Image (cartoon, rainbow, N blue to C red; front, side):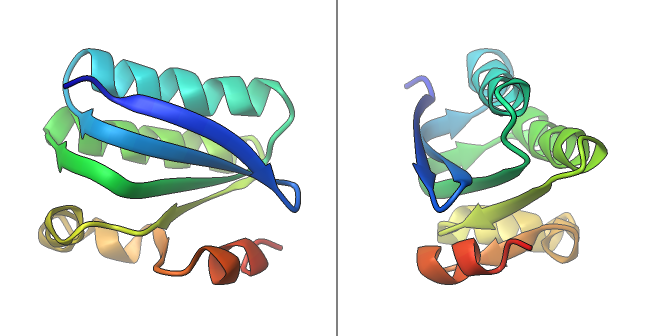
Length: 114
């Protein structure tokens, strides 16, 4: 199953609702393109909703880190929302849980952007 992205705006925050798998190839490319498109359109604050992500491989983890770096270098913030247990465990194991700003509530996440 390939990854799908739905993009919406809430209070000036770009929310990418991701579903499927972030894996080597199409999944990670889709994530990269979506984040870069949002940045190109002037969005500085991006919230990745991972509620419907079933699996992330090492390439997908790398792509999340790359997205985080791209947004930060553009002067923005990237936050993660609604991690599944699998994704939560993966970020704990890789110690990336401390790198990302992670939220379970969309309204709180949106309010946390400066």
